[in-house]
Image (cartoon, rainbow, N blue to C red; front, side, top):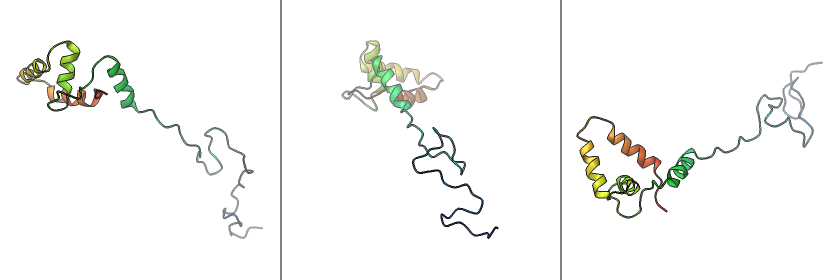
Amino acid sequence: MTTGQPDPAGRPEGAPADPAPGATSGAGAPDSTGYSHHAAPAPQGQLDKIHASVGEQGLVRPRHGRLVAGVLAGLGRRVGISPWAARVVFLLTLLLPGPQILGYLALWVIMPSER
């Protein structure tokens, strides 16, 4: 006989009963409500992986000798020229058409700061 009333557990009539205490519906499998109740693993920081990879190659922004973000000082050190020479070359490339500023901003994000 249907009464239209929820049972004492608050489930609507006809809803499946809760599983036994300690029982699970499997690794990530949806339960009777259709939702998975396990937490997804926390994603590794993609930027941390990039920083580690770039840092291993010796491309880092130095802590001392920066003018803006240290990108050009780090590039100069990596290729074996002075930071000022790298800055002059960058300023000269600004006379040419191209995405130099976007490249600088991208390197600012990608290059890790020196520890």
